[in-house]
Image (cartoon, rainbow, N blue to C red; front, side, top):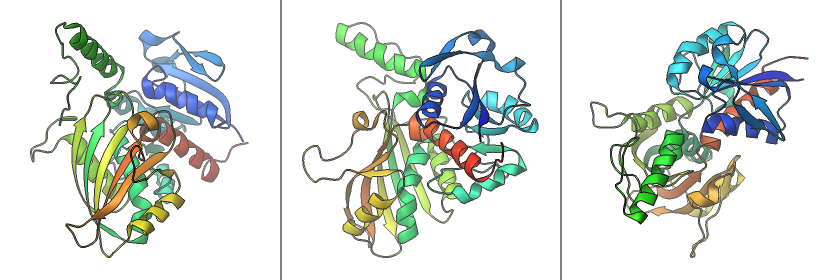
Length: 339
């Protein structure tokens, strides 16, 4: 079986990674189409050893396309996703626009593959927020073993989560500081080089940012609404890969050794947890890797049944492109029938 696949937003960071992963994982495609805005028509993107010229989204007919992997932002998804879905093409959307739609499944394949069948309601599947995706991969096997009551997470999120321009801003600010030039801020409200910014997305009435709200709401939809989640999301001067400090409170006791064993056996997870200098994963180590890495597993003695852990993952991969391709693989395996 093979499928015609369109990548919408093919010239962006995530779009390019989607193309790389489709090729690397030998996705069963009959044709790959790269789509972008009119200004990017003719731009070339890499697919394996070949290059593909981008076509215009506005002019493309999706009627003979099986899957559209969308990563062009919420405004484009709002305008196009339902139109595309109505042609019979299944949309896997990486934006936040459909994530909390009750008729659109929000999927992390290692966590809630059984929910994927709900795509038939709108022919749309949502990819979760990058910071949520890696966290629920870590939480799922522990929650299955010993129910999690509460999760407190602080994130250390790379600038690639804000796109190419943010990565360029970190680079130009860093250079400016070294050569004593003025530091200009365009993407972020404060200097990001040699700094951290406790502000991702817009502020809400209760004082949370929307990124923090996403982690709470999406964890409930994907994993379990009874887990009480509170988040503080912070942008850090790292180019790629998000890190998270996660504090968990369980209904009953779980030892560090058992938690480590559970995580080692779980899909999508690599445990690197040596109690020695360098015996843990950092963003530099995780960049370019498919796994969600877990380190620093230890008891929290301030609550009855508590654990702390450190979670790191490439946000452009598991947090976006890889998860989208994994959804497409699951969709083809279990739902789409095509000769």
